[in-house]
Length: 139
Image 1 (cartoon, one colour):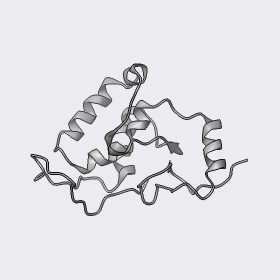
Image 2 (cartoon, rainbow, N blue to C red):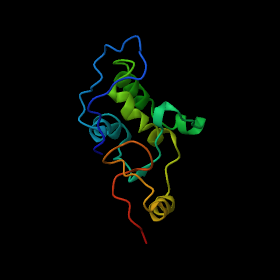
Image 3 (cartoon, rainbow, N blue to C red):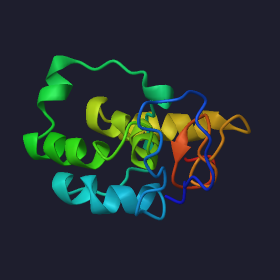
Image 4 (cartoon, rainbow, N blue to C red):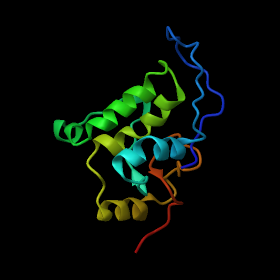
């Protein structure tokens, strides 16, 4: 996953905005591979739900299924500052932790019906379906 943030200017001021925004990670994929991936024993899925601007809802069941060691690692990773690159990476990853995983038939339907209306976020990471490959019809 190549999504990364080069330069960033906060739209609001936080008390600790003097914290260096840039993390030690090259991109979202490296962040996942070095933080969540080993704890969850997974790689990034082909498609995943994303939660931009930090807004999401989750069931108690899905929150409780996340191992405690993951919450501890996230707390440590996100406590570096209030507006940091790791937080922007997590905006795109909360869905992996807290949403019910997409089933194969749902992934196939999303790719089949996406047409030209899907932005492949593996390259730019702004809005739409977060996908790890170029959208193409599946049979």
